[in-house]
Image 1: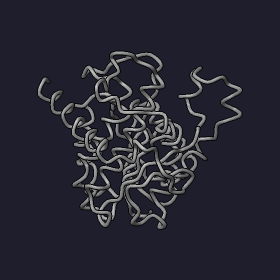
Image 2: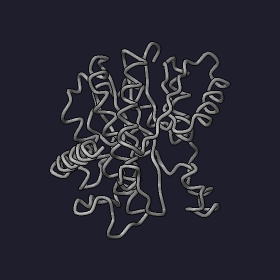
Image 3: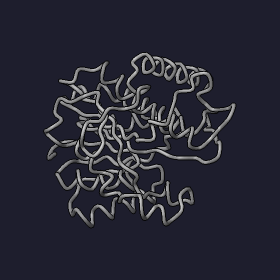
Length: 279
């Protein structure tokens, strides 16, 4: 990875921070996207303690608003003239219904629309850096999800798990559709399940502590597939696949449906254009 530039969202904690640390240890320059500057600095210092001399640059961005993600695209373009790897790790779970400044359901906005805008906005930079890679951290939770196109914002019946599984299904669908739209010789795109990682998501009282200890893995273990897809020569030309434990795995039937993926792509563009026209 020496000489390569990697952008990692959600790099201040959990599997994002671990992915940043390992890729930095392999010699990559890391652009760490963090919502909170203080937490980002803490993460950067932690990685530097593990990897002295690591090339780490912080970029502050709130991925909940469309304008902020567009600004992030501009910030990255100003910082670097190449981008070899983009790892979309940032995500959230909200037990209660909340909306962003754009009036969108927060889980859908952060988990799906943000990487949709970011990756598409940086695609020219990725293509110029070929061969480049896009790695989308999804979840095995997508098997329980379904795209509720009649009410994507879940205004008629919000549920935290319902919102989360829909957003993770959207991740897998987005990665698959993007892979169909770009040449694998230029940019590969894959999604993955990191495992049931013991992150703040589970430690906020959503899951009993005894269950967390028994059934979860560490961020270090959870980052392995992200790191594998970002750096391994074994996947040089693999694109459009879903991975679990560094192995290709068949996603859900809905995640494999090209018609659903194309519809999600079109609807996502419509939402972004609509919000842009009202600001």
